[in-house]
Length: 461
Ligand code: F6P
Image (tube, rainbow, N blue to C red; front, side, top):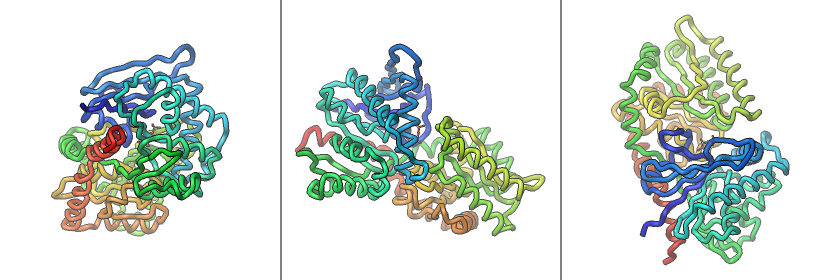
């Protein structure tokens, strides 16, 4: 009998209702479509008084159970602890990180709120798969409420080195809570190493039971690396269709034969957009023959816009793009097209297909699916070139990209030049290798492997 998969995450993407951006939403949705089951999380609605509502809808053979959230609690848990403390710290932004106890209390309370509501819809034979840093205490809280099901956790963002992690006063509690899961999965070997090292410091070396296991309080916790992938065939179809559509054709016509360098990122300080704009500025200064012949289009939809760190990076980018455009623009050419808006996924895949260069240069990233989407969306006969940060998890798999250090302005400027000037044979060779990696480890392999591990906890051999 196939056991029901219950995926749990703060952000839920119900098809046709709301398309949440980002890797988590894409990955979990693929698992739900492939296997069915239930996806539980936040509805996107906040309430000011009364009992928050819950709704269950069915789509594509899966169910989506979503709960509204009390506004005040959500703000302290989501903006306060999850994105004000865990997000910067786990992305190595120690200076952006701060800590206060009321936010930590709200984080625990929000997790209790989720645990209470999830307990109502859980069935005895379920496999429970919890996603991301918002929900680290959930396994412990579900166990306290009597849950006996196998419970796994996957972290979509980086796991930091212990020296950074221990800036957080409650890091030992978080590590203990992670060890309450049966399976704990990460994007890269480095994340896994950091986690195991941190647990060993807390519980002693003896807890490192085997390469894929920890022994904590007499229990076995499976640990592993499950790099998230993309649905290659779906993107090939989308990018092909969209590149012939009205929106992409108009954009291409507006380029009037100029080369297109493309960036697509949520507007987040971890994405390295300031460094990227500076590198493009440097590229135009160092290669004056490229002026008027290359355009950078940066799509950067707003994200977590109510937070100070996010409005600050937004202001900085507005000033910087204005300054660079003011410095280099001609009557018929503006170097940077900076768009604070989102597009349908299909349109983005079309933009990627017609781009000559894809810039994916975060200063820190768990994986970065834009890098993988860029590869999958290319025309194999005339592919664009991916310029990828070594500090993105994706760089561990995508060695055939042009790899850069996002802090190295000169190096990035030269990487842009190298990508633009790359002969078609080399572009095809690199693209073939990269596509092969994507196909071997696509989105179905990701959820298939994680769920298989969770199932083996349920029925040990
Ligand atoms: O894991 C990080 C992540 O969930 C990404 O998948 C996604 O891009 C982003 O965070 C979305 O953040 P939020 O839910 O805060 O909008």
